[in-house]
Length: 208
Image (cartoon, rainbow, N blue to C red; front, side, top):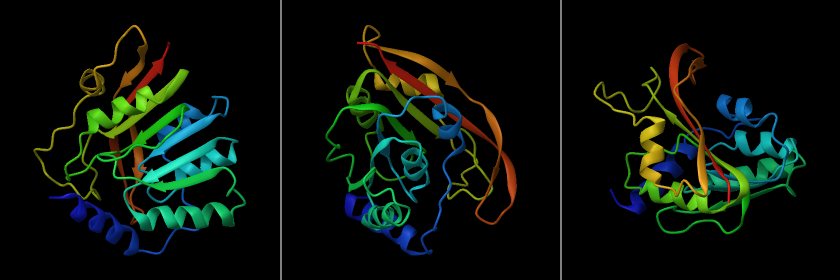
C-alpha cells in the first residue's frame, strides 16, 4: 500500500468517531515518565492525544506528530481547550519522508506499528539521534494480540525489545539500553472489556 493509502486510512480511523474531550495516556508512559523532570518531548504517532496532554500537564514542552491531519487538528484544538496550547505543538509528518526538527529530552513511540510500509528502524534511529545527551527513547510495542485489536492474525509475530534495539543499531559508545522487557498488564478495550496483554518496552538512553 502506498503513502496516500496510509494517510487516507488513518484519517478515516480518526474521522470515524468523535474526538475524546479528555483522552487518557498510555499506561507505560505514565509508569516510565512519572518521576522524570520535565523537558522537551517528541511524541511519535500522537493519535488521540492522550499522551501529549498528560505530558503537557506535567510541564513538558511537547512536539506531537501523526500522519493523520485529522489527529493533528484535533490535538491542536484539544490542547487549546485545556489551556495547554503553549505547551503542545502538533505537526503532521509521514515519518518515512520527514522527521520533526529539534533536540529532545524524551522521544516516546507508543505502538508505532502499522501494516503500511514504514522503515521503523530508520525512524527510531532518527529519534535516538534527536535526543540530547542524557535523553531517553521510549519504545512501547504490542507484544500480544488483544481481542479488540485490528490485527487478529493468530500467526502474528512481535519482535522482542532486544530485537528492536538490534534493528536500530545504535553505537554503544553513545547509547545504552536501560530497559528491555515484556511486562503484562490488564488492559481495557474500546467496548469496556478487559484482557491481559503483553507490552514490549524498550528504553534507550543517550550517554554522549
